[in-house]
Structure formats: C-alpha cells, structure tokens
Length: 274
Image 1 (cartoon, rainbow, N blue to C red):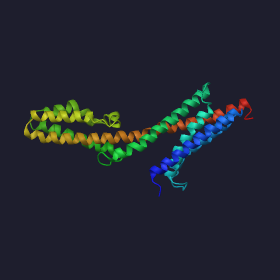
Image 2: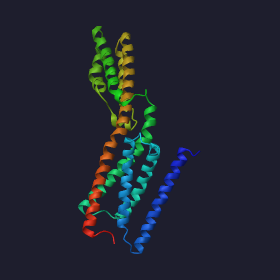
Image 3: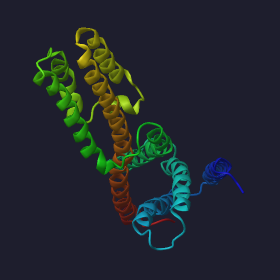
Image 4: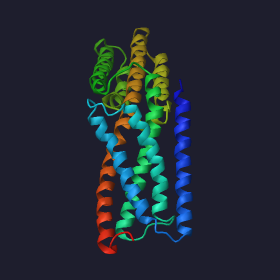
C-alpha cells in the first residue's frame, strides 16, 4: 500500500509534469501563430469552478461524491496546475486594463491564501496536539474564565489574610490583562515562549520577598499562567486554521464572478474565438 508521502510526491510530480506540458504546448502553438488565449481562458474558468466545488462538497458531506480527502488532493493539485494556466493565459506579462488587473489581483489573492492555508493545515494540527490538553474551540472561552477566577481568588486571599500585598500587586500590574483574554497570538504562531517565560521569571523572583505561606499561592499562580498560555497557544492556532478560510473563500467566489464578467466582455467585443 502506497504511503501518504509517496502518494503526495507522485501527485505533485504529475501536476508539475502536466504544468510543463501545458507550457510546452503553449509555446508550440504560439510558434505556429495559433490563438491560445481562448483555450487557456476556458481551461482557467473550468479549473476555478472545480476548485470552488471542493467547498460545496464539504457542505454536502452526506452525499457519496468520493471522500473528502480525495477532493482535497484534487483541490490542491488542480490549484498547482491553475497557476501554470494563469501564467499562460496572461501571456507571461503583467495584465493591463482595469478588469484584467482586478482579475489578476483576485487570482493572486486566491492562490496566495490557498498556499497559506495549505501550510497552516499541514503544520498547525500536530503543534496543537503537542501542547496542553485537547480542548475544542468553543470550550476555550469558559475554561479561560475559570482560570482567571482562580487566579483572582489566589490574589485576593493574600490580601484577606493580612499578608504582604506583593501577590495582589503582581496580579494587578501584570496578570489582570494576561488572564482577561487571548494574549500573544502572533508570538504563539511563531512558537515564541518569551512572554510566558518573562511572567514566570517575575513570579519566581517574587518568592524571595513573600512569606512561606504565600509561596504556595505563587506556585499555583505560575501553574495557572502555564495553563492559560497553553490555552492561548491553542486559541491562536485554531483561529489561524479557521481565519484563513474567511479570506480564501470570499476571494474565490469574487474571482469566479469577475471571470464570468470577463468572458462576457471578451466575447461581446471580440466576436469569440476564430
């Protein structure tokens, strides 16, 4: 049985070979003074509808139209081929004219967001599972609130007991904002732990200035900081996995609409392919 890595290598090789054949065929046709813009234009439109069909397939999961993984493979490698067809269609030069520039910008946006999404969906899920407890996205908010309430209670206990207010001061100055909501999202995506370590260092440095009875509270607060940071890490990764679709999908449908307008305009003013 073929492994996933070998299957991916095979599919990518076939897509690249297909792309090179398309470019070679285009150069031969251009050398023979053949008009290829209409062919590549229709091929581009078909490819874009095929790529958009993947999102429709995900919404119709109850209908047995091949597996979602098979559709995903088609989506990825059809996207690779579409880059070649797009370059062939514009004639290897930058588009000129308002509609053509808009089409080019939309396609670049779709291709770039698709590439970003491919990288995110391949790299973030293993990272999510490697750090902290597995928590679904909808549960992150309530768990964050529980951690904040526990940290607040520990800070208030040091005041209510009449002890030195160093813990409550630390909470007020450094931890109120930290526990209030998601923090350091970009740092988490970059896998930086600098902010987390800075907080832990401050908590550890405070131990020498508090009584023995307060050191246990500081230990618990440090544990809560780690749990909250792990939760923020998961939140950042899941937001990235969900958020790129809010760019990619609208751009795709916008591109399809403008492509249809482009086809109508081309045939209206040129009389069609000859």
